[in-house]
Length: 200
Image (cartoon, rainbow, N blue to C red; front, side, top):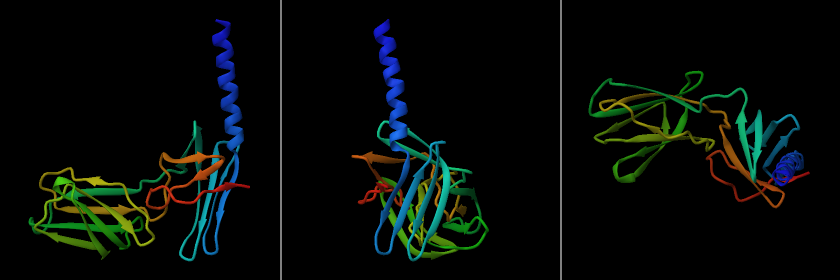
């Protein structure tokens, strides 16, 4: 019994030490790109990313599980909202993409077809019309490279998709990995990057 108690105390102590060990500011800095995340003792973070086209600051909450940093924006936002209806020509699929202020945006549209085929329709604006295709779902990548979640088609006869796309980055249970004291971030597309953020 005492052995189990000692193991439990050791586990709790090591968990606390691990969290404290990971707190601080991690950054990556190159000629035209700057990225950092400040992991604070309160379990909150401040993330910054800056290049020629972007200047992002995101606040939120984090927790650490083993070698993983799990990030959630606060306040939390939906990355994409989709309303499906039947409208217009039934042989045409309409995908109407707006930002949260109901403004049209530029985007690339990725259609999910049968047999796991994916078709990209590039350089779209506002409403995309697709004729004579059956889709299983789709996702969107905006001009900054921000990737939406996949929307799987729900209605059998749905042909009009009204999409509200969040053009600001959102962390939602996003997992970054610690490797040898450094942090491997994910990009706007949700993929692991090839560089690391290093602790100051």
